Amino acid sequence: MSDSDPIALRPRQAGRSLPGTEQVHHVGPGSAPAVSFSRQELDDILAVYGRKVAAGEWRDYAIDMGRDRAVFSVFRRSSECPLYRIEKNPRLAKKQGAYSVVAAGGLVLKRGHDLRRVLRVLEKQLRLVEH
Image 1: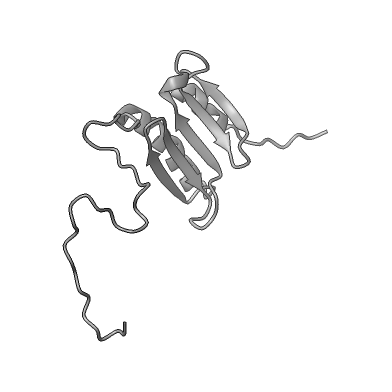
Image 2 (image 1 turned 60 degrees about the vertical axis):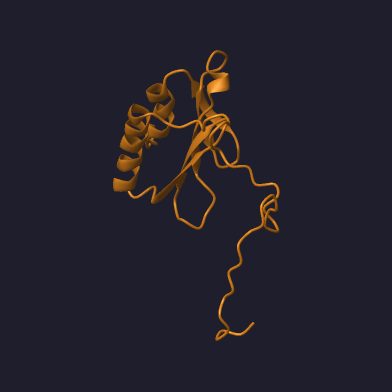
């Protein structure tokens, strides 16, 4: 097909999926709803994010919502892997706490029931110690 050839659109036949889409599962009617952050949770997260952006430490973020967890990922640059992931996993709410902050290497920095308390791990500043 060359650049000048028109694109032919054909209607899809009932019961037949497109090639490569057989294993794609969408969250929709009749399935479990996606886990998401509440307005207050996003306000708390974005308050920390805004301070870090103003300090020049962070530049970008991404929000992922799935059936089992919601993740707010923080990036230094858009093309890198996330520096931190702030996760909400309701299945862990009664055990370890629904909220956690995970570092780039997968180390869980803080986990708990209170999001504001968990986010404090990101607020800690390095101090110069003089002898």
